[in-house]
Image (cartoon, rainbow, N blue to C red; front, side, top):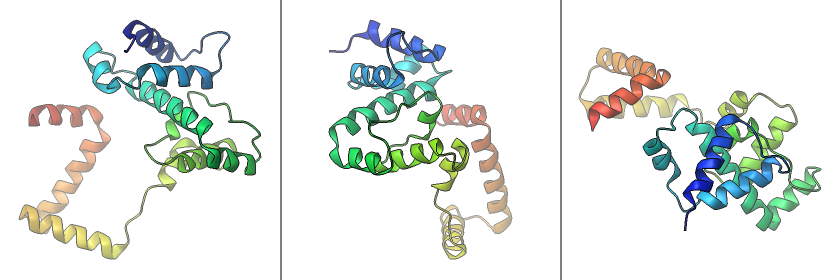
Length: 180
């Protein structure tokens, strides 16, 4: 059973960027994850009108999940020990932006890279994106042009507009609402 009052209090704590006194970020994130794991959190936050800090809240929950799973996974603990950490490293609201829905080792590799100063969060996140080879890009272009039945000029226009939509999240949200 979900304790909605406790979840709401924890959401307020995450939004304020604070950690309860007498608790570490890791402990708080695990408690938040365990309290909210049975809840479709993004839908709950949208219904409550708390979308301003949605990524921060979702990333904190993901941090709790990663920490919770790490405590139970001997391979990940061995990996952290090999990298020089005798215990699970202390996370914060900044480094949780690196977490994705991938395996534990990938998440920890990115976090440890950040701790070791191998790049900013954006650089580390971008370094894990797959870059298309020219041949792959050409095949995808041909596929899109054929499937949408457009010429090269229309395709270029579409790609330009799509880039603008992705860059401007408000426009993207508005278009998604119009498409319903």
